[in-house]
Each structure stands twice: as structure tokens, then as C-alpha cells.
Length: 259
Image 1 (cartoon, rainbow, N blue to C red):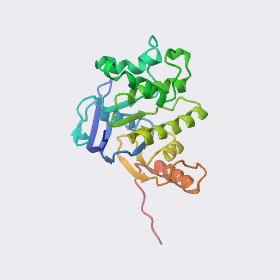
Image 2 (tube, rainbow, N blue to C red; image 1 turned 135 degrees about the vertical axis):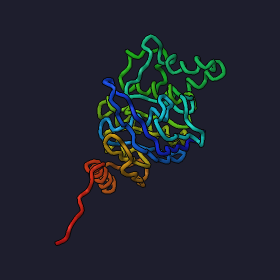
Image 3 (tube, rainbow, N blue to C red; image 1 turned 180 degrees about the vertical axis):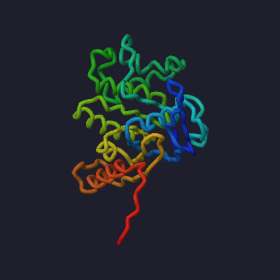
Image 4 (cartoon, helix red, strand yellow; image 1 turned 90 degrees about the vertical axis):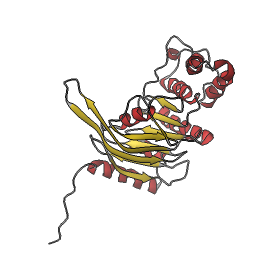
């Protein structure tokens, strides 16, 4: 497990349903070090989730290259775990079997069955092995989705707004859980979010993106120690700075004249 990531001049163009060309990403360059927690933030539809899909290998760049640990990303692999906003659990399987599903598909379950118990405990689901998704809360289902992604021992965990549908209290609880898991596993994490407070609370680096066709407007280092105080003056300053950048991202600034 390492987890260094590089985007080199990555561009992505889609063809819409009416046949028009849609430019989603416009020359994205980004380097992420092993063990970093990076949050991608920007306007809706600007290409944040597209970046995750490209990194996951679910789609290919129109131009440019993406590397994980100096290896070109060309297809999905267990070295990248992906968690969506919707847990996407199989409703007919127990929580245990949902988490074990990937191991069974790869014919690794017999040799690694103890991993299922380990990761259920890691995400706080001990005692719910025989429960079904409909019997659990949204937050607990998202914990199962997280365990399912982690059980493949990925170098990087990709999080596409996984907390967006949760209530405020559960969301803050899950934020702390993500930080605990990152610390325990020393894993690279990349998370798409629209919540500026969430980005400042979690991230080592916040990547602010422009409207589509997206490029990176600015990368901010968050040097606050963990656990973070949301009322800390530096926390509030960073939040205000990100909001300011988002308001002006992608706009041409008029020159200032002194007369």
C-alpha cells in the first residue's frame, strides 16, 4: 500500500444525448502524496466526480494521463476503493455478505475471511453481521459500503460525496470515523464534497475547481492539527477563503486602476 497519485494534463470530453460535445475537464494537473486526505470542491457539475471516475478506471481521459504509484491507470482495480453517495448494497444479502462479496468474487474469501470481521469492527458494525440493509440506518449502511471498499486493501480510497445524504449529526460522526480510519490505515483519501466546512475539517489539502470545463483554480494546504475546532479563527479564515475563491473561480478579474 502506497497511494501517490498524479494527474497530468487530464482532459475529458463527453458527447451529450443530442450529439453535442461537452467539455468536462480542461487540463487538470494535480499531485497527491501518500497518506494525504484531499477534498475536491467546486460548483455542481464541474467535473469533480468525473475526476474520481477517471481515477477509479471506470472511464478514460480524452487526453492526458493518471498515475497511481507511477503506474498508469487504465482500468478498475482493487488498489482503488470507491464509495458513492448511495451505499449501493445488495438488499438480498446480509451486511456480512455484502462486505465479503468482493472477496468471494475474487475467490479470496477462504484465505481472508478474517478480514470481514476486522473491517466490520473497524467501521463500527460488530454485532450487525446478520442484519440486512433495510434494517439499518443510512449512516450504518454507509459504514458497510466503506468496509466493502476497504476490504480490498486499496492504496487510495475514493469518496464521492458519501456523507451528502446523512443528517447533520450522523455526518459529523462519520467525518470523525473517516479520520480515525485514515490514521489507523495511513491511507490516501480523495473526497468530493460541496460542504466547505467538511472540506476544512477533513482535508490536508483542499482543491478548489472552476465551473465546467473544470480546471484547478487553487490548492490550499490545511495545516490545522487534528482533531479540529470548527470555531478556531484559522478554520473560519480558511472557510472564508475557500468561499471567496469559489465565488471568483473561473472569472476573469478586471484590473484595478488608481486614478
